[in-house]
Image 1: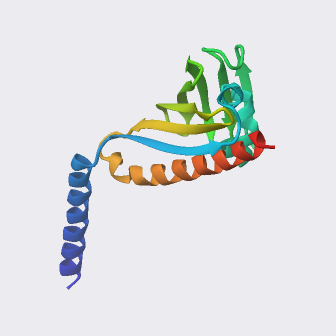
Image 2: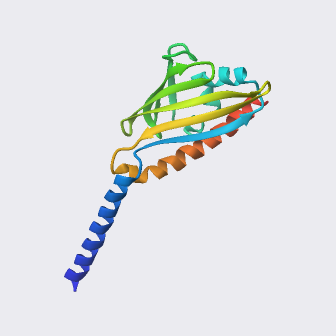
Image 3: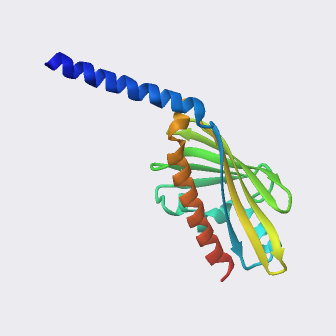
Length: 176
């Protein structure tokens, strides 16, 4: 009887493992998360605010929700090559470096060192809607390795929620 139970548990376990591995073959490894919001301020004013890494301390939930975070800034903030390096008990260690600025778009390279090593990219884009309105778009680009791409939906949910909260904070600050 015990052997039958162990046999069925083993069959179930290996069946689930095979399904997990097969899903990893069909679920995309690369993905982009994109969120947007309308802010009632001119595009130039919004862009000048979002290009400064230090301003993220005022609206980014990744920073606001982590009281153990220590951030060091390297270079001239708001210019290509400027960097924010963080150390945190909650978030680990990492950095973001401005890699592109074009008057509308701010691209950053994200480097995570701890608790795991990973490199990603993100962009924040401020588009002119009218003289007094801008659309701000946040994009996060990631590639998950097989078979971990199966659980990438968890990352997508967390990042999408954080971006929505960031935008609420950003809108409140800029529209004061």
